[in-house]
Amino acid sequence: MSYLYLFLSFVMDWCYGLCNSYGWAIVLFTFLSKIVLLPVSLWTYMNSITMIKIQPDINFLKVKYYGQKDVIAEEQAKLFKEKKYHPLASTIPLFIQLVLLMGVVGAIRSGIENPAIDMSFGPMDLGMVPNENGVSLLWSPAIAGFSAWILCIAQNASNVLQSEQSKYNKYGTMIFSVGLSLYLGWYVPIGTALYWICSNLMAVIQLYILNGIIKPRRFVDYEKLEKSREALNEIQSVGKKQKNGMFSDNKRRERRDYKRFFSVVNKHLVFYSESNGFYKYFKGIIEYLLLHTNIIIHYITSDPNDAIFELEKDNAQIKAYYIGENRLITLMMKMDADMVVMTMPDLENYHIKRSYVRGDVEYVFVQHGVGSNNMGMRKGCMDHFDTIFCAGPHQAEEIRETEKVYGLAPKKLIEVGYPLIDEIRENYQALPHVEHARKKILIAPSWQDHNIVDSCLEDILDKLSNKGYEIIVRPHPQEVRLKKEKMEILKQKYDSDDITIQTDFTSNNPVMEADLLITDWSGISWEYAFTTHRPILFINTPMKVMNPEYQKISTVPLNILLRNKLGRSLEPDQTDKVAETVEYLIGHTAEYRKEIEALAQEYLFNPGFSAEVGAKYIIESIQEKISRKGAGA
Image (tube, rainbow, N blue to C red):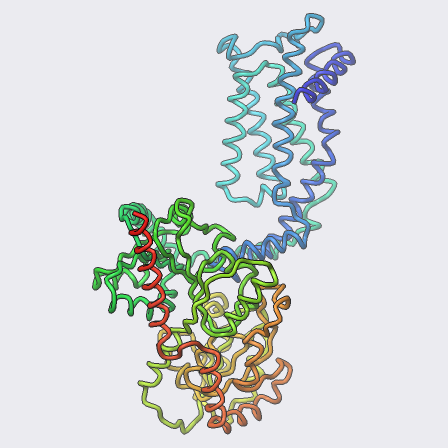
């Protein structure tokens, strides 16, 4: 900073030598600084245009992955890299201005101390400081604040990036800038305030010159931007009134539950659920623990309407807590339980961290799918867990090979199985099984780019209609929620005695009653095949690959390995073969039943009692921790 101060003092003295007036020297100095920093200004200006240019893509990403913050952040980072957008670029001019301001303060104070320099500028003494020389100089910070206000007005109206920001951001920036100008203007010499005023006014002129020369509208598709905003506003408005009405109540409830959680000492077992829909993955394990132990289950959920709160009323062993995502960050950092069980991956990789207060917390990952973790989840998503409950031998093999390839410490792998399939199978076996006069076909696509609905659904329906089948199309809930118009068009075109477009997911019966499933890469394939032992027609839409490095592991993902063993597969452009393939699969159901039953035994650990195995591990591990503590005491 001393070198900057000396350099700026030299430049200021040089300007004074040219102008023979310190006031005009400051004006010239400010002008020269704008010229020198023009390349930076141009770069940040073009960077701002890039941001607005890609804003529609960002908005559509937020619509597509609504509620999945980690996925949105990851996809947005990829987009920034692809389009060469630098998120922090807009802060660089502000940083430079503040550094420059500090240097100017020193340079002007140097001028004040130099008896050879005349600090007068008309009737003003540029060396006077309002804070030291009285309120009569209040006009100095006031004009500095006014110039900052003028700059903010211009930026909010004409800066390509700032004009697209929310009112909160616009006026927040304005309040900060004006407030800073008033504050600094009171404590620095009038000469510094003059520099700040000139800098702000020249920035306004520079903004309009750049707008006139570069013309942002040549780069930005504002029509697409508006459509993306409408799509984002539509999805964000779902449930907004209810959310606003309950916001304060939930905040109070969250604070109360946070305090209540940490008021309990010697917590042994904590489950964390992202939302109501995740309880099904813990259900069998928790029910076994409740039936066979007196362990208190502390169940944290980020869903205020989670069904766990109803279960809590009927069972004193369950202690449920509502903790929103933001407060969850600090709660997890302060975690003081012996064991934390969760289905949410990426521990330590994003906002959820391991405990900062206890290094011996055991973090257990519970699977929420049977397929490949290596291909279907992000790289490193399980690296920071201590224990993994594996659904089958393929998951254990993938993890061990991943540890070897990347040089990771071995984790504890527990051969548990998949309790959800056990529960579904038990419910399925309790159903009355009758031969359908008209064979039922369920079409259940995944939620990803170019899925069946987006690529070839209508072709499939056209080929299968009037063939004597009862066809139920059950789109992914996200598809129904985000593409309502498309769903209505499909209903109008196809809803008939033969075809039903189903958008109500309250019943799981259509899945279990179907004689054949048609899907792409949906996880429903495992539940259907390993429960009903009936075949599947797979449509080979583009694979959903979350880990671009998945091929570094030689283990073939189960999603690929068993695809043609659970049934047959067709490319999206082979819909002309759909009818004959469906006829073949249904006609050979008996043969497939034997093969799929054998595959379920081979690729699932402990079929029929996986929840018991998982629960027993938790019991033994907690007992061991308690014993260890007792021995240590």
